[in-house]
Amino acid sequence: MKNYTIRAEPTGHVYQALLGLSLQHCETFILVVGSERLLERPGRDVLERLSPLVITRSEEQEWPGTKLIGPTSTVWRFKLSDEAVGVLTSACDGLYDWVEPRLPEDPCLLRADGIPWLVTIAHERDAYMRLSETERAIVRQTLRDLVLSEEPDG
Image 1 (cartoon, rainbow, N blue to C red):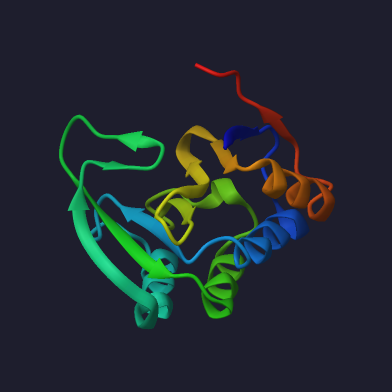
Image 2 (image 1 turned 120 degrees about the horizontal axis):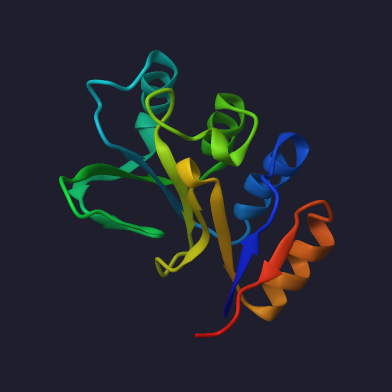
């Protein structure tokens, strides 16, 4: 597997198609909340709509793409489903819109074995996909407008 950097933010139909495609590869996803007390109404609404799909909720200092030095954040893990994709696509128009305090942060889509398929560091406007050659071919064919570049090894 290799990492592929997303070079242009997936928005609109590309964002929707990316999340739709994730249903074929992933079983769970995470969202991160630094301070639920400061989370605005749209973010609280997202968590409420996703509540039937919660698997775990834990205080952590690390998740895919991020390692905190200071206090913990709440990492919410959810079952990925058509319903979840509907919530994620209706909450905003792009992958980098997932920034507190408006919304939870850093949506990461995870395979059944927990290995990330998509990692987002939204406040840095950064994301990458971890793909096999077969998955890369599927992404290239299915998401023609998604701009990816292979990261160098090492």
